[in-house]
Amino acid sequence: MAELTTLSSKGQIVVPKDMREDMNLVTGTPFAIFGKGDTIILKKVNIPTAKDVFEKIHKWGIKFAEDRGLKEEDINKLIHKGRGIKIG
Image (cartoon, rainbow, N blue to C red):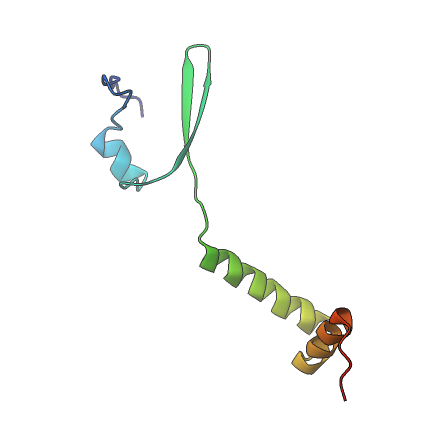
């Protein structure tokens, strides 16, 4: 889909409404912008939240432990050992 738009005096470009709707673009959507010669490319980017990153790492950690047969108490012992803390 190609449409024409113009650059405002503030350097802003309007993304046509049909295109915004088709691509689910909303106010605040982040973009990476690339330019060379007479070509500009806008790429919508998804920046994960801290919560998203934590959940991904948490899921990975649970799977990692399960694959190795580790239990929560084993992990706690390894953490204490790594910190130089003697238990019991």
